[in-house]
Every structure is written in C-alpha cells, then in structure tokens.
Image (tube, rainbow, N blue to C red; front, side):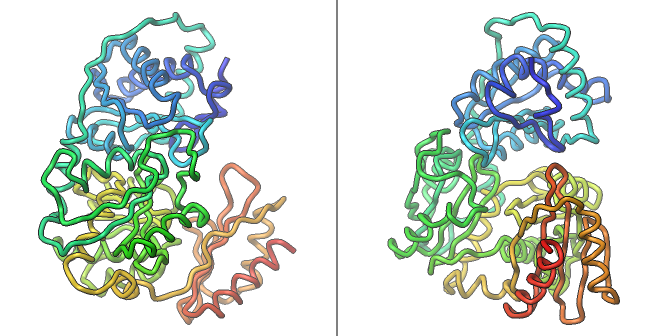
Amino acid sequence: MSDLSRIVKAYDVRGTVPDQFDTAAACALGQAFVETLRARGDEADRIVIAHDMRESGPALAESFAAGAIAAGAEVVHAGLGSTDLLYYASGVLDLPGAMFTASHNPAQYNGIKMCKAGAKPIGQDTGLSDIRDRAQQLLDEGLTPVGEVAVERRDLLTDYAKHLRGLVDLSGIRPLKVVVDAGNGMGGHTVPAVLGDAALTALPLEIVPLYFELDGSFPNHEANPLEPANLVDLQAAVVEHGADIGLAFDGDADRCFVIDEKGAPVSPSAITALVAVRELAKHPGEIIIHNLITSIAVPEIVVEHGGKPVRTRVGHSFIKAEMAKTDAVFGGEHSAHYYFRDFWGADTGMLAAMHVLAALGEQDKPLSELGSAYERYVASGEINSTVSDAAAKTAEVRAAFAGNPTDELDGLTITFEDSAWINLRPSNTEPLLRLNVEAPTAERMAQLRDDVLAIVRG
C-alpha cells in the first residue's frame, strides 16, 4: 500500500513507479482531487488531464481519471502534452487540471502537477496536503477496482500553438537557424507544432532537431538542462551547424535554456531581463517578479526601463502567488521557469523561447552580443553542502560578515557595497545548505564563495 507522505511534495506529487507511485495511488488522488476542490469551494464538475512521454503515464492518467469520475466529475483527456500545454488547457477551458510528469527526473519516476481552474497553482498550503490526506484515507479503506472509464478526448496541440503565436509574432523576423535539444522529452512534440510548420504557417526558422523522438527512458542524456553535462551536445551542434541560437527543453518542456551562436549558455537571469524589457515595452510601468537568487542586474534593468521589480522567495508557488497578488506582467527564476500574465500567470518555456527568438530576429546582432547587455555580474551558480546543523552554520556565516546589510526573505542574504551578495538557504528536504554568490568580477565572486564555503564546510 502506498504511503503518500513519501511522494506528495510541497508543490507536486513525485515518486518512483510502481513501488512508491502506482495506479491505485493515482486513482485515490484523482478522487481526492475532485472532493478536496469542492470542499474548498472550487468548481470541479469537469477536470482536464494530460501526460508526458513516460511509459507509465497513460495508465496513471487513466487511473486518476477513474478516481475523478468516481467522485462525480467529467474528465477531458488532452493526451500527450507538455506541462505548459496542460496549463493552457486549464486556462482556456477554465477547468482544474492534472499533468502527469516527473519533469527532469530519471525514467523510473512519475508524478502529478495539479492546478485549479485558470491554471492557478495547488501546493501544500492551498489544498495539496488535504488531497494527500483524503487519498491516503481512500487507500487505507480499500479502493474498489475500476475498469475502463469514459473520458472526452481532445487534441489541444494546434490550439496551444495558435495561442502562443498570437502572443509573440515571429512571422516578420530575419531568418534564423535554431538547434533545439528536446532531450527525448515533450519538446519533441510541441516544438514542431509551435515553431515548425506541422499545422500552422511556416515561420522564418530553420529548426535543427536533436533528440526529438519521445522516449521516457532518456537514451541520450537526462532531460535536465540545468546540469551543464546535458547541454554539451547542443553546444557542439550549434557551432557545427553555424546556428544563430540553441534551445534546450526539460522533460515536460516547461523550462527552456538558451545557448548563443558561440555555444555559450545565456543565463536565465539574462533571459529574464531580456523578456522583462520586451514586456515593459508593451506594458509600461508594470511589475516584474524575480526570485532572490536571480542576478541583481534584473531589478536594475527593470527600473531602467520604467518597471517595478518585486523580489520573491525561491519556488514556483511563491512566484505564482506574487504574480496573482500584484498582477505582474512577467516573472522569471534562475532555474529557467518563466511566468506570463498573458498565460494565466503560469510558466511556459516555449513562450520565453519565442520572446528570445523575436528579440534576436528583430535586429542584426548575434545572440552573444545581444545577451551581453543583460549580463552585468559574475555568478557562482548554486553550490550544495551537506551539513549536520544548517542553522548553526548560517549563524557562523552571519557573524563572519557582521556589519553588512542582511535579510531573511529566504534563508540568509548578505549584500555588500560593491553590489556583491551571498544567499545561503537550507534545503526543505535534505541536510543541505545551498549557496549562491554574485559579484561584479570573477575574482570577487570567487573570494566570497570560498570564504563562505570555508565556514560552511569547516
């Protein structure tokens, strides 16, 4: 019997199949999803579901649908899709949604990302813990096996592509050669529809595909572009083909990483600033959200372009909550999640990629030159250290840098007169401290990084 406390995380469900997450658990979660939404005053007479390319996805999705139907809901099944396609479906149909994916996790994993109607997020504080508890009760009582269920099957891929093309017009840009690494994930399904000419008018883009074959065993590399090793093939292909840009999507294609024409990564902070400038040109003076470990260049550039930067904790639930609270036009994270008011406040890597293609194609500079305008500082990237007492180590770091401004919005942030900063955050699930450092020069960054690590690991 499943112990759902092992797989229901802060923002989603995620576990290995079938030992942690099986069809019985999916069925119980489907029934609990509908019952909990109703108990909290939300409409749940119809829901929409989709799944990625993982082998376990169809059976888990069907079982979830059976549970939802047992609770009295009708189910719209969108079939194969990216996570942002599911958010599109939830938004345009105004239905609660459930996406079966484990994102960038290895092949043996699967999971569920759930949302209310209009793609509004569900986390532990907004219903997920109640869903877990009710589903556990159903499992403990013993679920009645359900046979094949009747669902409404809808192919929304073309409508999703049309919606995105209506938000960013790429038809008039200069011709671009674009290498796309889908990592055998859902980008191989959505990129041809949105950027290719699979169903819509051809764009001035020559797409060079890498690993577009849908394969949840990830035979070429993990579909996690946050790891530099998983970008190596794309970087080489961009240079080999003389391409203008490279794009890498994660497994469920809700995140997008960008490579310039020289094969060098463009940081997600630079992409956040670039997209923010484009959105502020359309919506002057509006709010832009950024989390506290994006580059300090982001709020600087937002202010320079007349916008209002708002800083949040790390994590998509915090960004989405702040997007809704402030009616922000755009939000970006260091992890390459990008959120758009025009997309129900949800994250979509595809729309961010389209903004970058538009910015590149509307002028003649190469991406390395265009992107450099948004890269003002040197960042360490996230460095994890195993510690036995995170609070004690954090206190030691605070004492070592006493006299400098600090805040505790998310962990400990210390800022310095030269615009350098450090952030030290404890993991919610592991005995880890996560360090991020940024400074005006590589030397200053390395000095701060090494000073903090000497304390943390001492």
